[in-house]
Length: 65
Image 1 (cartoon, rainbow, N blue to C red):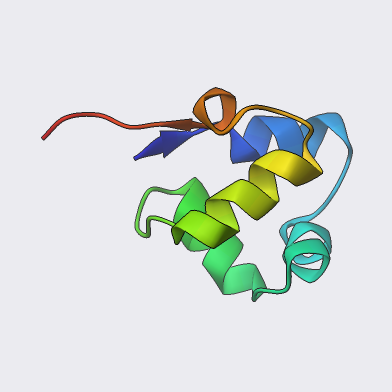
Image 2: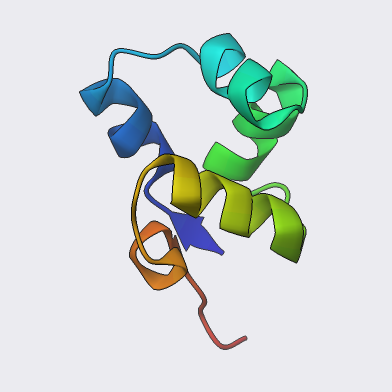
């Protein structure tokens, strides 16, 4: 699943560790989501979109496989 986390995070000058702390996950989890190696759970996806004040579809782009 593609996402805009890296761009949104950079706009706020947050590190992966900063973002991870804000949503209660590890920095490795944020890295895995940003690189497309891991799809977040629905609650985490909503938490991230709310933190960035965006609709979930604005943060995550689901692609049909």
